[in-house]
Amino acid sequence: MEIMHCENLSKIYQTGEAAVYTLDDVALSLTAGSFTAITGPSGSGKSTLLHLLSGLDNPTKGTVCYRENDLYRYNDNQLSVLRRRRFGFVFQN
View 1 (tube, helix red, strand yellow):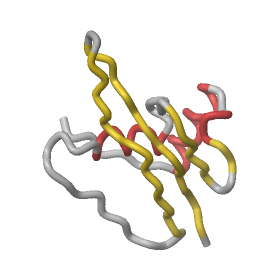
View 2 (cartoon, helix red, strand yellow):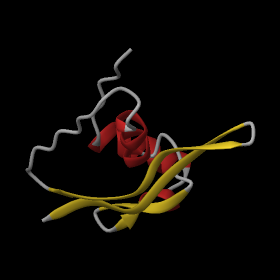
View 3 (tube, helix red, strand yellow):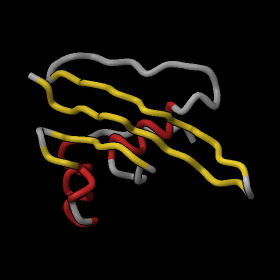
View 4 (cartoon, one colour):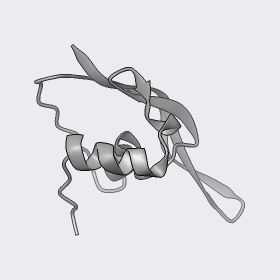
């Protein structure tokens, strides 16, 4: 059973006149009960992806759905409750 998925997920940061594509059209599907590892070199967008999947940051474009509900339609309070009850974090710093 699919528990979370994202489509066309992109995050672009503007640095002066240059656009930095941290993520560009990412698609991902996570299944309940499965184990998923996100790996890659420093600066490849792993933390950005996790922030977008958890609602800690907003994408430039794309969708993230948790249990078929668009995560970015939740208000701040609903996102806080969801993170507290359903998501776990271990921050690198």
